[in-house]
Image (tube, rainbow, N blue to C red):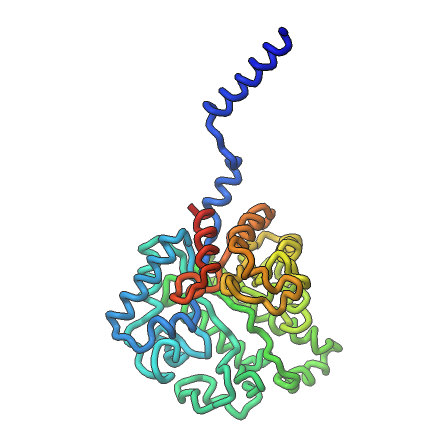
Length: 394
């Protein structure tokens, strides 16, 4: 009888403790980590075209304000704004013409300095703004008539500095003239705009066998590098010089890239030496791999892939996985057995954030992209995904 009495007493005390002792499911260090995490959303040239082009200056400004309000109110603290997508600019540049994402014809007068407006309004809302640049892409198609005479690419047409490929028109990454042009463009931004960072996406080496043929053959006089190693060195040179340029001007400005989520693809196809950047100093402040996979992806399941990225980092750069909100509610043909995952589940993104928070090098996450989250064409699944994500950011 006494044993039963003591057992009841113990149970009663445990219940009292559970009710009256404050419950905190997160350790203090975990709370701090979440409170400080980067919560980024990409605003691409597509969003700029969909939301801004064709409107009056005042309408454009109101739209920008609304976009930033949406970002802030959702719980984000950082935007990655595509300021130069096709050898052009959404800002007042002495190097590049105005962008077709915000004007009707490349080179038309900008209605106002859109980057300047974005930066000031973002900072008023305590949002970081990272200027997103596509360094090599000139056009998505092969029509050279869309390139204005004000574009630095125009004077390089029919030279080895540019190649028209099946997928569009691109600068030659191995050209010294091109590298100088890109660096000058970055310097123009960091000197004239109070940006918090410079960001490169995953478009590095164009899909071409011959774009850098002359430079590669010339290099063979001094070394025996394979074409792959030559191209890896070419991209690494630009990354290192960009980092050095930014830090020489202002150490607080961050530099990051958003490479393919497949580590091997970066090395073998895009010629981006992410292994080097994640182990040696002097290249990046953060890496934002496009881990655009679900948990049931047969080839690259999310958990294994994001952990591989985390394990790759041995220097002090930060890991900020980019997540594929644009896939929500859609079939993922590349996922094989997991092709219907984004239709059958509505909490994938939230679960990916929660899992990533456990990684040792984790510093935040990014969502690709604005319209998939705040656009007018969300599916029911996408809407529920958005609500589940918002719940873990509250």
